[in-house]
Length: 85
Image (cartoon, rainbow, N blue to C red):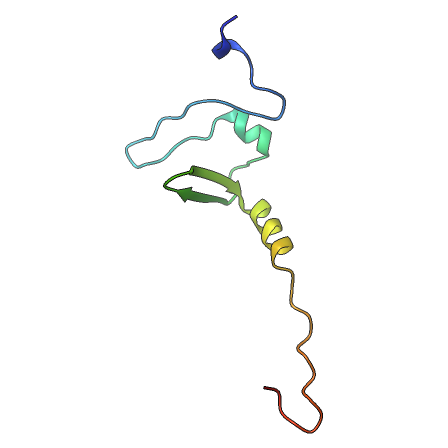
């Protein structure tokens, strides 16, 4: 069996897409199913000239930001008899 005939490993997807005249691509059904992408979902596109393009569901990115940047605690109390610097 040729390597290109082997299915991708569990939890992975490999395929090709063609860019249309308006710069649009269609995300293949196998990838949409794998990542639970539904019509109307918002996706975040990240691009780096050296590393390429990544597409992430907005809710996954929101969870990442929430963990990386948790809400700040209450502001510090001003010093007694003075104002806050």
